[in-house]
Amino acid sequence: HPFFARKGSYFQASAFLSRPAIGAEENYDKVSAEYRQCATVGSHTLQLSLLGASSLGSDIPVYDRFTLGGLDTLAGLSRDQLAGQYAGLIQVAYRYELVRLPPALGRGIYAILRQDAGNAWDARGDISLSDLRYSTGLALAADTGIGPCGIGFAIADRENHQFFFSVGTLF
Image (cartoon, rainbow, N blue to C red; front, side, top):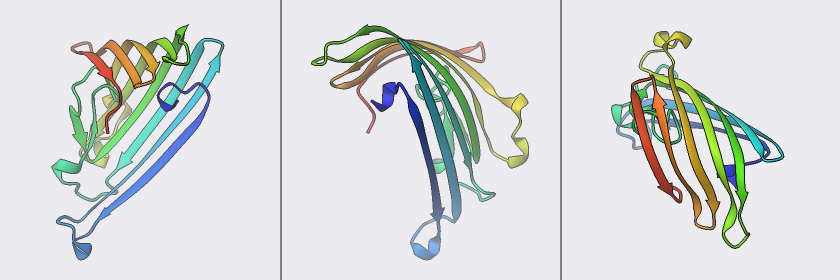
């Protein structure tokens, strides 16, 4: 299951070119890439995720900028709290399988600890490792027949925090 992967790699890259010549309102570019690597030994799973995004020097309109914050990216921040022309994120997650569920109910119940570091920037010259925002999250999640379900807590930058509850996936 992609939400609770136990092994393997994932890579996705995308490019978006907005041009008035083909009917767009604005002229700008967006590229992004995401990589994940997962490994499991017994009930212990470690996952590393990397994300990078760029406007390639163009000016992305406010409504289409890269965003971070929320359950999947810097969970201690509000959803889409950070936005910019550039974005970067690294995540390290540890997952422990607490209970294996009967196949009719799903796959398992897990305890998850995740550390994120990332940010979104408006100018290429602003990008700096010293400017990263940090988030640590702890969750109890289940891989069920209706999709992932979870409850948890995350804190970012020692001042922002979020409680979350989720059932199923966004579409």
